[in-house]
Amino acid sequence: MRLASMLAGATLAFTVTFTLASTAAAQEAPPPEGFPGGYDPEPSKGTGMIIGGAILTGIGGLNLLTAPLCTVDDLIPDADVQRGCVIGSLVVGGVGLAVGLPLLIVGVGQRSDYRDWEARHPYAGWLKDIRVDASPGGASLGWSTSF
Image (cartoon, rainbow, N blue to C red; front, top):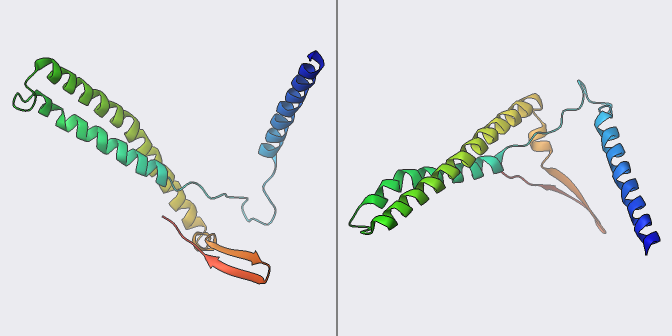
């Protein structure tokens, strides 16, 4: 049992060392040949961050705007429930804004970087959506797009 533990530990150490070494070598690798000006990979469009940030910012802002409704006596007659409602609205609204706004800002920055990249590579926008699929009877050409 002890030998098996030692072998497992040695294998894990070798795997971690090999992974770290190959990761470091991959980061130091020169760009592929044939690209004028070097390799310029496609950046993220930022769509996920923009959507998530907009949703969280909207929810947070709506909670902050509707927090005064918690103090209306006709809606909620009990003072303790009113206080809990106001605190809950402020917490949810504050957290929504604190998380949503940075997501939105970073997503818009990523979208700007993507548009700059797309301007530097005028054909890459539609060329990357074309694909060739091999099948047993031949091949097919396809095109797909997303937003």
